[in-house]
Length: 277
Image (cartoon, helix red, strand yellow):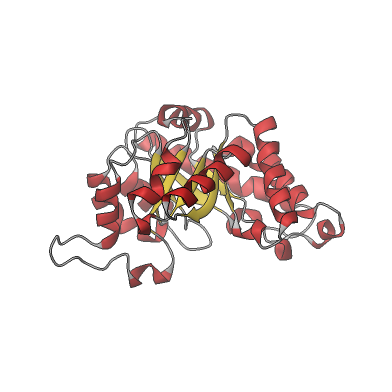
């Protein structure tokens, strides 16, 4: 899937929503936990309820890795279920990998070949050779961490280089934007950093941005769109907890679908305001 394919799905769905399948076994409805395949069953019902309103799913791998082999099986089954039933959906492994070249080659193989995701989040701290292996797979994406939404992001990401005047996250974007292209590279910019989006857009006007932090973390969708939307939308806005855990009864999937639909309606309005629909 390239950027044109992704924009086509945005136009079809009238949405740029990415639902985060950050499935915490401890938070799923109690009645599901009595079953043999609780996490996958939870994911399946969430997917069925939200698929009409979203263009992407993001699986935070930590929630699955914490369960050992069972978690990896649940993650694999979830990806296969999406592939079989919603073939045009964009699937992100939120794994935040990044290591020396030969190690990154194996990470890329694991998630692009074995897990069959479309994209993986990567940490660029070790430089170009740690990201390059993820860019060798046609139709696959590296999503590079830039300005994240967590409180500790200020510790390093906004430190200013006294020689160039660039903040660290700006330097990362400037250095990495030519490693790949707009069809295989996007960037993570937290919704709680919406004020930074104007400057980021000046540096990378055509790249897609993955925007976490709307919903439970307090990011403002309208501010994100005002500062970050481009002529192909250029945004995947992720919501996880606000959708997944909106209800903890047997109606959890129905309520999740309602939350996703509400976000889709707001996104459609914003797409219209930006003359993209």
